[in-house]
Image 1 (cartoon, rainbow, N blue to C red):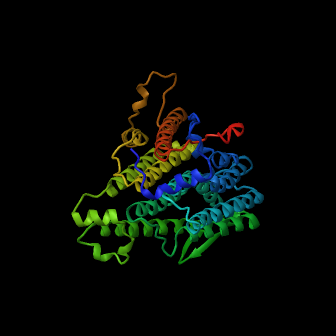
Image 2: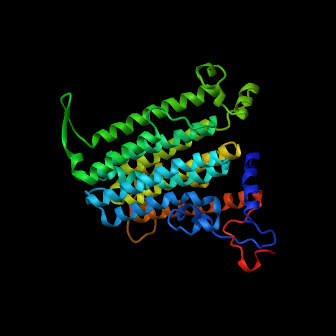
Image 3: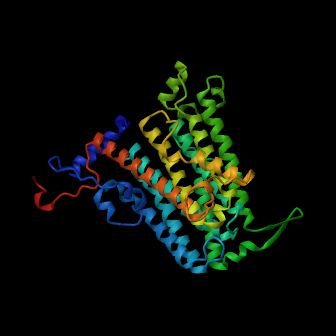
Length: 411
């Protein structure tokens, strides 16, 4: 499944120099799923696999999220000001180190596609708690405004990685990641000083009464529309020989895709990827119509974030390994079913789940249904991550989470 490019030999040489690999050691198979979900929380993980050391930046925001979850007001109530200050510190350190590690890796000659895989894969997972905490300042409550803002943010994140997958380089416009981070810092700083109640202040713009918190929503909507259109046109025009003249920076095109264009080969999967993310977005819009988001907001959002991070990670793996995009995988298996059942429930008042032999009637908004779907996606994630990590480890001839016995270090 995985075919690593020649640039990935950097990791093999580096690990040989650091004596991370001991050829005579027996391989220890550990659920590498913990790499993605608890890498940010446990500091000692970095000793297991030395090039993951920079992922400690995720730990800072997960700790801040835990503080918000325990002592904060959640999605519907205003949190104490000191909670916003903790979130501000977590966001500042996370975003700062997240921007520095790539520059440091490139400066020292240690950058590689494998580093992109783990860095951006973890970023995709941490994206959901970041959105939940920062959007909760506006006190939108558990409703369509909050969910719509999160969907807009998901689209921006996905489209940036989608363009990188097909053009080989991230392109940040005049308002992108860094600008969004600064906007988040400023909003958290305001909340830590004046309290989040300030975002409920009424303002009048051209005879329209708005809350100050709505300004953040407008920024997200603008960024979503701008990013979606610009990234789609950039990739579509560069892959279409009839419209390639519209792209001014042709040098950003990878040789692989340029060769495909020249020889008239098929697209490696850009439109399939857009269909997949569209199915994901439509599914959760229909599912939210059933009341699942209002009844179980955290379980709903974490399920949504889990699938989203899976989509992004598949995108990065296809980019790193130069693979064609698969049309179907288990992480997406339940999405059509959820969509159909939700549409039947909302628009036709048909509850398909009522025929199940359960003690009480289940609906698409029942907690048991959400928990089942969450566990399903979690298991799919687990199987996928273990397979990918094992295949990468086999190609690079490394042992993931292997600790060398200090008594036999020289043997």
